[in-house]
Length: 82
Image (cartoon, rainbow, N blue to C red; front, side, top):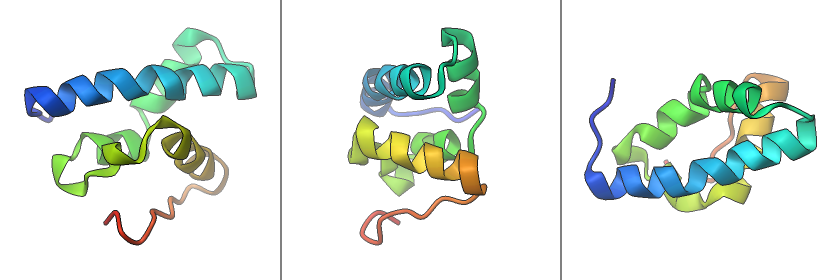
């Protein structure tokens, strides 16, 4: 488990519901399914890694990156991010 700065944890706690909501709406998932998909994704591991600063992208773009991961098993991050 990664130990995060309290501020980063707060930001992550604010953006994850948006991603989960979009998964539920766009993929017809239940709350439990959407949560599991997000929390078990490579994207979420990257979001938790404070050094990447990926959490700065906001939930709409993070959702798009998650969709990319789910459909292609790859993530193409914006160049300025990583």
